[in-house]
Length: 269
Image (tube, rainbow, N blue to C red):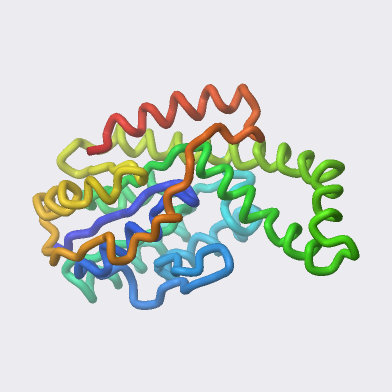
């Protein structure tokens, strides 16, 4: 029976570099991967078969691209379940141990757990302040770049925009991404509740480098045949940012995010 590892984590949680490390350790993470983009110049390491499937489900369920809105609609119907089953069967036929990563997997984890009752789970957790700040930055940095490049007064024009419109936009995004993060967190907590410790391992992204050996050994003990690869050779210092308070998150969401993150991290090594 193939050994399968599902990598779970909210967008911007460090799942890309974690999956890149798994790939370097010899785990098959997909034949056709989402490559470097403006949002991640090192590559996302997302299997395009799952990426395209999830986006297809969003479209069929009337959800916008990306997996941040109308998340209560993120369920697989019978036809979609059958398509997922075929993707999983094809992966297992090609490899005796494999993995995939796509943050949107969190939204469908209930279905994947039913389809893959023996699959192992790797949860990557990152401070919610860092997650939401990173998502806001990704959404707004082109505005700064465009204004600085094109406006007559450059950086001064951007500062004027920031005071008049930028802060309002960031507050809206803080609420938007905060609500999405809560939904993803709840799905991860549901997964933790439905799986026992022998099938699951979690790691804080901020501790990934220092817990590298412990994580490697845990995966080996779960049945994966891996070769040691030094994470430090691909881990850049700027991956770790300060987890200081993101001021654009509403207080009501902040309380829930902190509570749920604490619960998730109880399962981390």
